[in-house]
Structure formats: structure tokens, C-alpha cells
Image (cartoon, rainbow, N blue to C red; front, side, top):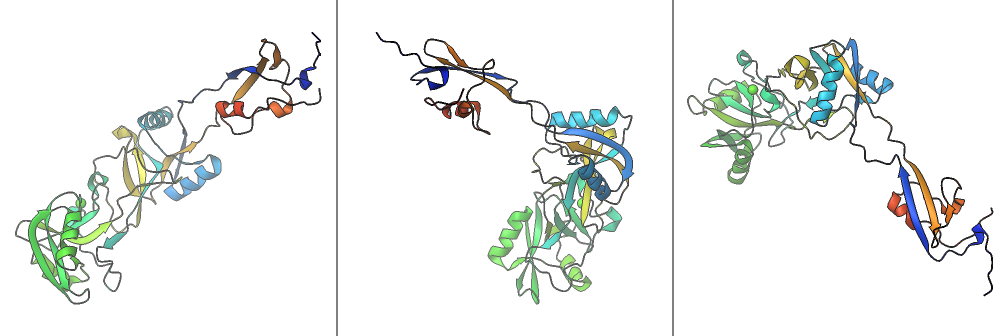
Amino acid sequence: MKYKKKTFCQLQVKLLTIQTLLTGWKISTSLQHQYHYVSDSKNWTEAQTFCRETYTDLATIENTEEMKQLINTVSSAGYNSDVWVGLYSKVEWKWSDGYTGSGAEFRSWETSDDEPDFVSANQFCVIIGGGGGWWDDDCSLKYPLICYRGTQLEPEYVLVNEAMNWSSAQRHCRENFIDLVTVRNDTENTEIQNLVPSGNWAWTGLSRDPNFYWSDQSNFSFSNLDNTANLIGSMRIICGVAALHRSGKWRFLPCERRLPFVCHSIPPPPVKRQVVKLKDEGGGLLCGSERPCCESWHPEKGKSPTSILKHFKWSHSCAQ
Ligand SMILES: [Ca+2]
């Protein structure tokens, strides 16, 4: 039988046993964010600028492990109080009927109670009491409601003396009247407060965006919010701290407050070194770590190890 010798790179490979050895390719279970404590006191916006210039951004915290890591980072620097993190909340009150005309900014907060006080960072809807004061409160609580019929500019107020949560109250008003009530001045406020059942409160149409935001635009999913009050006053935005003296729990302070802060950086991905060995059916090593594969045999960039193998050329030649 005539035997035709083939050089390595002229070899017409019909069947290859492929052995792929991946070195240093492991699924990272390490933390996504690396934290950096900065002891200089800055307001939240200045801290954000510093973090963006020096690292990646003000700290985002996405799970319990990261929370522990942040606490360790700050504690080991010997600090044990409030630090700015990247968290914030928008205080944009809106009327249920969308009213934005004259008097839309009228408020009658119960200041003797420090309202709006955003207790437990979970009060996004507004009730009115019999004394005419307003409270921000948990939208899932059940109160009577005040709707209006007629028109937005010439409303007639209607008490619905049946306790329900804010969303149900809104639906009820929209289905049976026009909407939940909008309050634009003291005269209207007095008229409405007189409808509130004695010793109780009633839902108004005022509520706000219940979402929380991170400086780096990450989705807010993990929560570590404290159950304390967060005094909002007339602020349009409130900024988040981790309170080291309260197990790192989060609460909100005026963004102008000067505090130390925590930035994060994103560690570079683990080095993905790979050694590919190709063997022919007889087990002879065609190429590998000792003898580099021809260039056209190299995996395509960005492909996973599995898909890399599909992109080898089985039959080819290249210059030795
Ligand atoms: Ca409140």
C-alpha cells in the first residue's frame, strides 16, 4: 500500500479528537462591586463626581454579601456613622387627575407631625385628616376616600366612606366619579377636610413615584432600607446613606449634607486563558500549547468554549 506522507499543515483532517483544556476559566462567584471608602466629607453630588472621576460611581449594593463587604470596608477605616451611597429617591408629587395648573403645588402637610416623613421609606400616598393636615402614608393601608365629580376646575367633592388602599380608591373614583380629589388652595382644603369622617383620615389624589434609583442606573432590586422616618420637607430629591451605627441600613438625608462616602469600582473580568489541543484519530498531537495551532484554527473572539470548537476549520492548509 502506497503511503503518501503528509506534512502537518497539508493534512486533510477527517476526524479529530478534540481536547480542550481551559486554564483559568472559572465562573466568578466573587463580588461584582469593589468598595472604596472616602473619608473626606462631601455633599452627595460632589461625592458622585469624585467617585465617577476616581473609580466607577457612588456605591451600588446589590445583595447581602456586597452589603457586608461595604460595612467591612468602612468599619476597617474606623468609621461608624452615615456614609453616602449611590441611592436616591425622587420626590415628585403628582395629582391622580394629572392636574398641573394653578395651585397644583399647594400642600397642607401636618408639620406638627414632621410630615411628610416617609417612614420606612414606604409612604408614597397622601391622606388628609379632619384638621386639614396631610400625611404621606403607606399606599397599601386602607382609608375612606374623597373623589370629585363635575369638572376639574369646578369639582364637587364626594366622600366614599369605605376603607380601601390607594390604588383601589383611585379605581373607585375613576369608575364612579371623575377621579380622586385634587386640592389647590385653603378654601378647597377646608371643604374637603370637613368631609373626613370624625377621627379618621381619607385618601387624596396626591402620590409620588415609588421607585428607588442608583447613581450608576442599576436596577433597584435588593433592599436594605431602615424602618426609620426620612424627613422630606419640600425637597425634590433625597439621597441615600448606609448607617453604619444601624447595621448599615439605608435611609435618606438632604443631598446637601456633607458626609464621607463609598465609591465602587468594577474589578476587571478574570483572565480567560485557554489552551486548545487538537489531536488526530491516532492520538497524535497536531497542535496545542507546545506547538501553536495555525491561525485559522484559533477560536473566534467573544465565543464561549463550546461555540469556539464549532469554528475550527477541519480541513485546511496554512504556511508552516
Ligand atoms: Ca408620614
